[in-house]
Length: 119
Image (cartoon, rainbow, N blue to C red; front, side, top):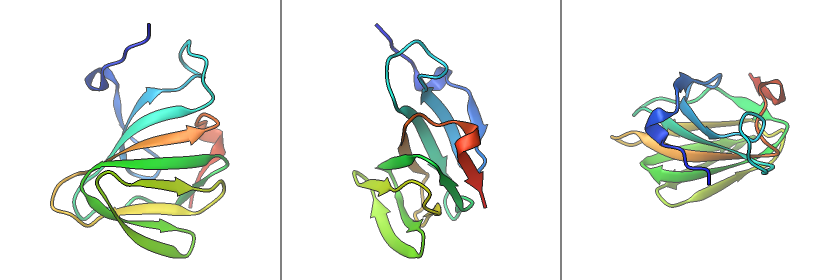
């Protein structure tokens, strides 16, 4: 049985400037999965740096509201919405709310630093 507590995951500032806690990465833990899972936070008024991944990515909004930018498109996003980000798409997200924008990041295949480019 594999159980992990979010509060015990090290908080880092990711390359795109989000506050990140990596929950699960099969390249670092003994689990048989293809994908990785992280918990991300963007403070009110902040925006992540443009970046792209070789892999596909999904954001699932847990709290707050934002503007999602994928390539040349922009859409408002909010709690309980899922965003699919195709591989190699330039992406960023802006918190347009008054509280933290919190979301899960699922990367498939699993996230590797060498597969991400901050622009």
